[in-house]
View (tube, rainbow, N blue to C red):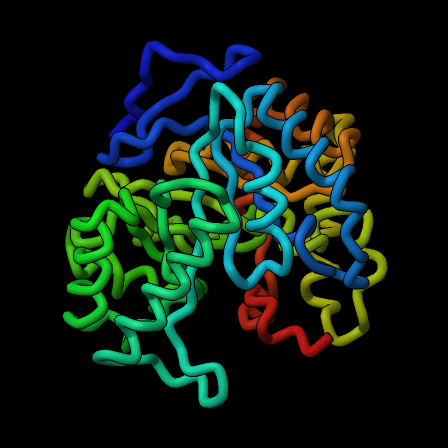
Length: 324
């Protein structure tokens, strides 16, 4: 299923289209905001000042980014996004996330505990984002055993009451997105980790999303810094990742481009996604990613060569297994 392009455009001409079958209008690129809310990624660099973060968010919007992804768990991210876009004549599509686990045991909440938790989380997000309804609420790090009727009922109630316009799921690995897809159209969007090294979802998950018309949001394009110049900072136990990234780096050098540009163009021009998220804390990186997107899809022979790159230890494709 192709993206449904609307007549409207972002401020610098990036076409807007529907997220799956929803009425949310999104740009092909979106800004992930965990890095502005808290230390994140290899080396855990601290975010810039609030003022610089707000300026960066507004600059991204002015450059055509019409989708911003945040979460209640991303430190001050929601608050900064709310401050950046409150009071303006135009507002981007903003997606946030809520966890549904007990803070001490990490067990999924059920019944009245789930209802109270979701209600309070949504109310706090609305306050921080300075809006009357959440465009898209995603269940954070969804696990297959969380997909019970009581969760769907409570999310449906939030939609019926006008507090949430649409809801989706944010997942890791393969089992969880497959479990979401098995529920049919109950969920309107799926956010997944996808990169030129982690192509596991191309076999079943992404084609199924396309067939169902489910909104698909890509994150972890750079695999938390592995597909960047930081690959040489990886500890020795991540050597299988480093070796695969070096193979990709050689392909990039053969094209006369950087490894991050190769990684970004591979995902951003995938035939499967509605939105490709990238995170940044600098105007320079923002412009680099926009320029990489404008350079267009990778040549077919380069895509074939990428398909031949394999990470020896597939467990390392999930950052949760890195132990750093």
